[in-house]
Length: 161
Image: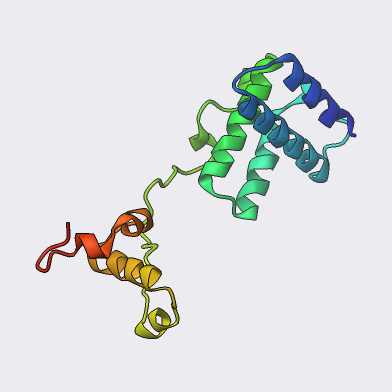
C-alpha cells in the first residue's frame, strides 16, 4: 500500500463523520483519488501535502474521462473533507464554478418508455403477464400497479375498477 493511501485510510479511521455507509464510501473515493494522483505523476505525497495543483489535475482528469457532473461534485466533496481535516480548507475552492464544473441535471428529457410490438407480445405465453403489459401500455401504469389488477374482478365492461 502506498504511503498516501495508508495515511488517508488512517485519516478516515480517526475521523468517523457520517453513517457507516458514508464512511465506507468516503474511504473508497479517497483511495481512488490517491491512486489517481499517483498516476498523474505526484509521487511521495503525504496527507498534509495537498495543494491546488493536485486538485486542478484531478478535476481535469475527471473531465477528460467524461464523468458525470454529479460524480465530480461528489468527489470534490470528499476532497473538501480531506482539506478540512488537515486544516487547509483554502486549497480547494469553495464553489465548483471555479473549476468549471456544471450543475447537476436531475430530470432527464429522454423517455425510458419502450414500445411493445404485437410480435413481441405474441411471444409471451403467460396470459397474466401479457395482460399486465397491455394494461401498462393502455393506461400508463407502472409494473407493480398493473400486476395487482385482477382482470376478472376489475373489468366492469365500460370501466376498469
